[in-house]
Length: 353
Image 1 (tube, rainbow, N blue to C red):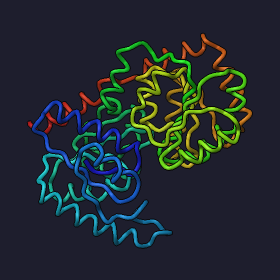
Image 2 (image 1 turned 120 degrees about the horizontal axis):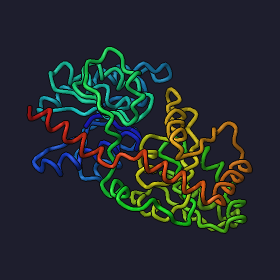
Image 3 (image 1 turned 180 degrees about the vertical axis):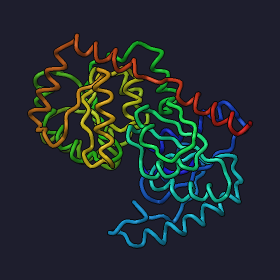
Image 4 (image 1 turned 180 degrees about the horizontal axis):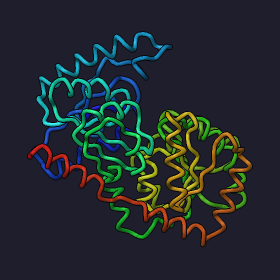
């Protein structure tokens, strides 16, 4: 498994890794990542080994980080050594710049390469690696048109998620009485600032419980901010048991990373999506528009929002039970609960053929 940096890349890779081992218990899996982002925190905690490359943060061609290019070249040689060491049957590119060096090394080492792309607009690394891949797995069918010069076979199976999350699709859509706020692993600061000032009006009007997953390292500051505003909010920094939060929720405010959208669909939850405006190629906005077009979400663009306008939208939706039910049903119809099983099965079939 090559790549990572953000939860959006890592969590589907971990879900796929577990499913591969469930289907083929003798499968040996190792991750290749960098020292930046969440790789070193999340992967070992999940029980998988990880090798760390020298690659710097961001693009190898970054002008503000001139040492990225030589570090990237070193990472290609490191990746080739790791390929010789592990002799993998397949390399799965998870996306992000951390996937680039292993993907290129796979190309020159003759190792079969597959690409996992969760977003509606594929990242630059995955667009490059898809030229040499045997298979490309998509969450959004519309992403297919963005891949040029690729002879790979494309599948729109969806995005792998943990089995405990995929099993939410077997239940009725979640219908708790809490407002859930999810900041994501990147870009949480501005969203947190918006909701902190919106929540007092929301709680005053609705009297609802609020759960705020604020992002790693933000928990203490966000909790203090709510205390200063005399509002009782349950705050988590980084929370792995999201199924508990989903089961308690009636409405969700979230960024629109592909992983978040996949999980909200499986939970059957209506959402207010606030795309990260600095996301590469504005892919979060396009992700969100897909969900809004299906009827499962309301999209609000961050630059046009104030705490007051956000509070008004939440209160309006919360009081419209029929609208929330319609959105919940529409959200659930977009769910792909068997994504991990189908992708794993396709990879195993490729390796065994």
